[in-house]
Image 1 (cartoon, rainbow, N blue to C red):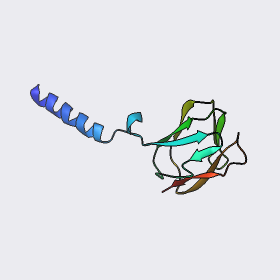
Image 2: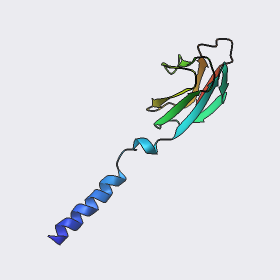
Image 3: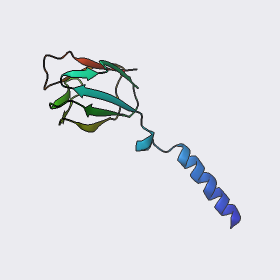
Amino acid sequence: MRRNATIWLIGLVFIGAEAPLRAEDEPVFTIEFHDGKVEPQRLEVPANRRFKLELRNTGVTPAEFESNELRKEKVLAPDSTSTLVFRTLDPGEYPFFDDFHPDAPKAVLVAK
């Protein structure tokens, strides 16, 4: 009986080593919108790996993360936070912008 329990326990250890990343293991990167300003303008993220973008609007006007290349958009009310999850990105540069402030310069996610 003890031998079976030991084998079972060893099996669990090996299964755990191959388990997919849990949500709390994903890297999180923050982008801040503030009345037409986006910080940072250039953000490096991991290529070929799942990650999260935390979007914060610290301004008094709405903001919208939008990227045609990424096919993602997210509207943020003033003084709010939201999250986008990316399964993976191929290496490259992905421009994004605040659609509520079209005169603001575009920013870019750089997947490396």
